[in-house]
Amino acid sequence: MTAGLSVAAVTLVCILTLAVGSIGLRLTRGTSDIYVAGRTVSPRRNASAIAGEYLSAASFLGVAALVYARGFDMLWFPVGYTVGYLVLLVLVAAPLRRSGAYTLPDFAEARLESRTVRLISSVLVVGIGWLYLLPQFQAAGLALRRVTGWPSWAGALVLTVVVGINVASGGMRSLTLSQAMHYWLKLTAIVVPAFVLLLLWLRQGHPAPSAPFPDWASPGGGFASTGHPLYATWSTLLALALGTMGLPHVVVRFYTNPNGRDARRTTVSVIGLLGLFYVIPPVYAVLGRAWLPRLPTRDSSDLLMLDLPHAASPGTLGALLTAIIAAGAFAAFISTSSGLVLSVSTVVHQDLLQPRISRMTSDDASPIASFRMAAVLAAGAPYLLSRLVPPLGLATTVGLAFAVAAATFAPLLVLGVWWRRLSTAGAAAGLLVGGISAAAAVLATLFGGPWRGWPAVLLAQPAAWATPLAAVTMIAVSYATPRLVPPRTVRTLARLHTPESVLGAAHPRAPLPLDR
Image (cartoon, rainbow, N blue to C red; front, side, top):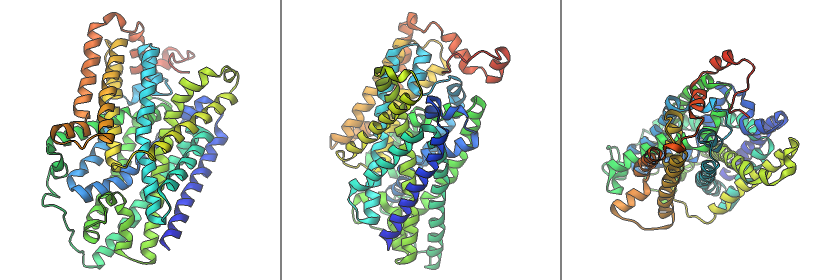
């Protein structure tokens, strides 16, 4: 019964996603609609879409798994995920919207006036996107295998097909509608079973949770296994707070707002929506310790939420709750993967496919066709990669993607928006140093080891050293190369920091210089 209900629930989510996405397909007319939904998304809808896109497998399943396995200290993860949007709000949300760019490489080129910086940014967008997609595909395979018994590749393949169709059909227009729906679907799918499980827990005499180790509820206990819990805690927070700013699929969302003021309003709403969601996962962790004090394997904690309903209530009720959670989990996989595939597709389309096909410059149909080719490539490559790389845990792998983003795009965005002395050579050097150092740490964590002591924690948590290294490199090289500061820097910064109402009053009919 569990398998049948879960298959039906997952199928319904896939059908709803494609049906809602088809509405966006009918509204898509050109590349602006594909990349940024015509820059006409309202703050309320955009906030729901951003929250739906941001709440990935690591949030829906991974937070409960971390708290269950390693204690309440892991609540730093949802705190960091949410604080990242506060950093965005304060530092770069409105200027990014005013840049008129479509993507992070667009912004880098417009700000630094350099094709080299754009190329480096494009490579980083693809790398971060695929690294973030890896746990989504792996989690989809594991989750569908747990509730249906299908092989792992089947769930990942279903996710690849649905995401590829959703992105290729209408780009950002389609995703905005489907991801807004996904947020409320995920919130329902996590709140309703939690409420029912709490009632069952009270009815059964509220059995006490069984802690796996004495300091399960103590500060620093979750990072105790690293041998350096204080460093691991601060590095994790730095990666999550600054990494959010550098995630391509997050940043591109701010280009869809009509203006900078709406970008700020969107960010404030997102913080509220994320806070509402993150209240719930710890409930599953505590109830899991009451009903499932021991799981069959170490990796089973990632699927705790899918196992918990059956442990609490074997039979029809447990099967129904499992199906609801499975639907929410698959909505998380689809929503986040769609945003990542779109960001990667946009870069592949702009910098790889479209420049090499001259006939696509004459009309709107040809660029849309080439974008669909890019979407197939962007979704297919990480699916193949997910079959080769062993799972490290949802939150762990996602944390590595945050670390790479923090060590590369976060310094570029902050300095690019607020520091007029940033030179082309400084930006390129910082991106290379941060990207290479963080990527080397990621590869060593994924394929090397086992590591012990400080090498282990420095490689698993590179944000605390790679991010300052990249920022210092950008500043030092920029001071050493003052002649390479872009000649139109003052004009560009004025554009980023001047409200649209002022620009419109001064030049009511003049096009914005960085808009396309």
